[in-house]
Image (cartoon, rainbow, N blue to C red; front, side, top):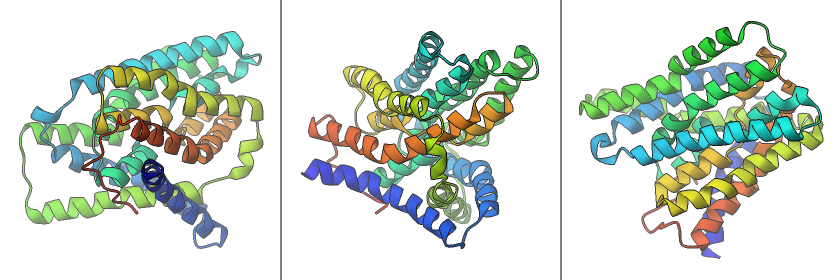
Amino acid sequence: MDSLIYSLTATVPVFLVIVLGHVLRRIGLLDGGFVTVSNAFNFRVTLPVLLFCDMAGSHLREEFDVRLVLFCATVTTVMFFAIWFLARLLLRDKSLVGAFVQACCRSSVAVLGVAFITNIYGNAGMAPQMILGSVPLFNIYAVVVLAFEGEHTGSTGDNLIRAARGAVTNPIIIGLALGMLASLLDLSFPPMVNKTLGMVGGMATPQALICIGAGFEGRKAVARLKPTLAAAAVKLMALPAVFLPLAVLLGFREQALLAIVIMLGSPVTPSSCVMAKTMGGDDVLTSSAIVATTLLSAFTLTFWIFLFRQLAIWDSKNEKIYFA
C-alpha cells in the first residue's frame, strides 16, 4: 500500500494541474492565444533556464553519468529504427508510417518528464543528462523518418540539414550546454542573479502543465483510433517493458532509473504534431496519439513507478514528494 500511495502522489498532482488548465480553458479564463504564447515562452525561456540552473548547480565533474547519456542515446537509436522497420512491415496504410514512428518514440521529456522528476526530488535530478542523450536524437531521427516517409517538399539532404540545425539551436539544448559549461568551470553567480534565475526557472513546470491542459482537445483522440491505440501501447507499455529490465541489469537505480522511465514512458511531445504537418506526415494520427498518451500515461507511469518500488528496485529512503 505504501508503494501505491507513493506512486499516486508522484503522478496524480501533475495531472491535476493539467486538469486545472483544461477547466480554466473551458470556463473562458484562458484561450488559444494564451496557450500559444505561453508554450513559446516555456520552450524559449523558462525550461532552458530551469535546466541551466539544475545543470550549473550540479557537481558535473563528479556526478556526470556517461553511462546514462550513452544508454539513452543508444536506446533512442535502437527504438527509432526498430519501430520504423516494424511499421514498414506491419502497417497496411504506408502513408501513416512516419507519423506512427514519431508517435511511438518521441517523448515529452522536457515538459512532463521534468515535472514528474521535480515532483519527486525537488529538482530535475538526472533529467538534464537524459535529455542530453535523447532529445537531439529525437529531433534528428524524426526528421529522417518523415523525410523518407512523408509527402514532404524539399530534398532529403535539406531536411536533414534543417534537423541538425534545429537540434543545435534548440533553446533547451543551449540551456543544458551553458549549464554544463558553468558547472565544469565552477562558475558562481551573485545571490541576486541566482534568485532571479530560480524564479524564472520555477515557472517552467506549473506553467507548462497548465498549457497542456488548456490546449487539450479530447475529440482528436477518436481520429485514427486503431493506429492511435497501437502507438499508445508501444509508447507507454511496450518500450518500457523491453528496455527498463535492461537498464536495471546494467545497474541504473534511483534518479537515473527514473530518468530512463520518463524517457521511455512519457506521452508524445506536442511538437511532433507541428513537425508531422510541416513534413507531410499524418498530423491527425500524431495529434490523436498526443491526446491518447497524455490521458493514459496517468495510469501507465503510476504503474511503472509502483512496480519498481514494489520490487525494491527504487531506493527511496531519501526521496520526498515536493510538488504536492
